[in-house]
Amino acid sequence: MKRLSRWPALALAGSMLVVLATLAVVAPDFASTPDLSARYLTPLESPPFGRDERGIPLLDYAAQGAAIVLLPALAAGLLTATAATLAGLVRCAGLDGVDSALQVGGELLGSLPRLVVILVVALLLPPGWRNLLPIALAWAVLAAPGAMDEAAATAARLGGARFVEALRAHGFSALRIQLYHVIWLNLRPVLVRQAAEVAMQVVFLEIALSYLAVSRNEPSFTHADSTYSWATLLYLGYTAALGQPLWHALFVGLLLVAVVAVFARSTRAAARAR
Image (cartoon, rainbow, N blue to C red; front, side):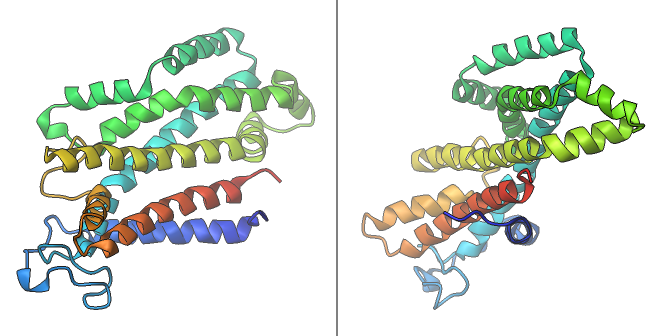
């Protein structure tokens, strides 16, 4: 498969982010009032996405789901990238003691079972804190060791402290070396790729947790009862296999998942090394 070049990839990633951000901005606090006269309407009969078995527009579900995942997913990606940046800079600075401590801490975190830890975090959250952000940040912390190892390995391939000293000998300032030569030119592909992957994982994690809650008719760990996740669309799509005329809900849910996947993939392509 031919690789997407940088500028088209950046434009595509930006377009997907605009779509998600627009949905999140227009998300209502509460879903529309049920209208039984509009039950099961298709996207052609009730644009843009049709309606469910109660006559509620699927656009409400799509918008509220985007509002649930957008900021926590981006925050998790940023946290992972920050941890990886720290590991790369420490390796380039030649701080062996700090580098060893980061490796030991990363190994301890990496040995933890992620899903078990996430479920424990979700169960320990007070009822008023039941939202995706704490869970997303916990996932980012658990994913950080892998990102940190890759960033540190990339810095080591540059030559570590010798690379920095060589640039200083050419008259470059410490700030320029760290921000431009180390982070921007060399660590950027690793940081962006790891951040994009973690952000996508958080979205899929939210869908999985919410799908379990919807299927069991229980409160969700990731959002208030007054809002709906994209998992609701996928669950409505599941009921279509049982005879409900809701195939359009499944298509909308899969389309939104595809938007997230395309955003992550195109972001990685836009930031890859030259």
